[in-house]
Length: 67
View 1: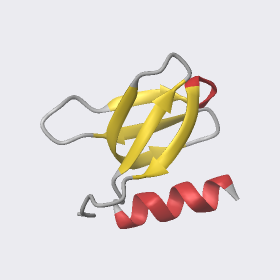
View 2: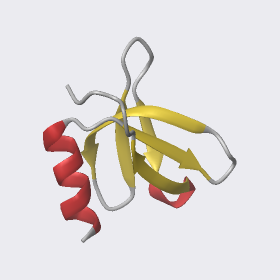
View 3: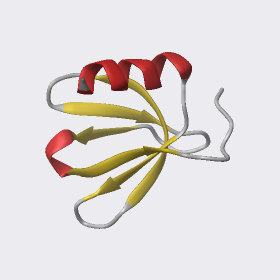
View 4: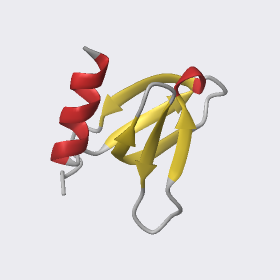
């Protein structure tokens, strides 16, 4: 189910918030994912490769426009 959800988010370039276990929140869209990490693409900021074991949750950003 996880891979289907991440694939759908990436295909639609849905804006998401990624909250890490340390409390930091990053916003962007998921361009790529695999079994251990996701690539978060951000506008005007560097893209991030985030290990899945560091992620508390990924939530769709309500009110933000998809690309």
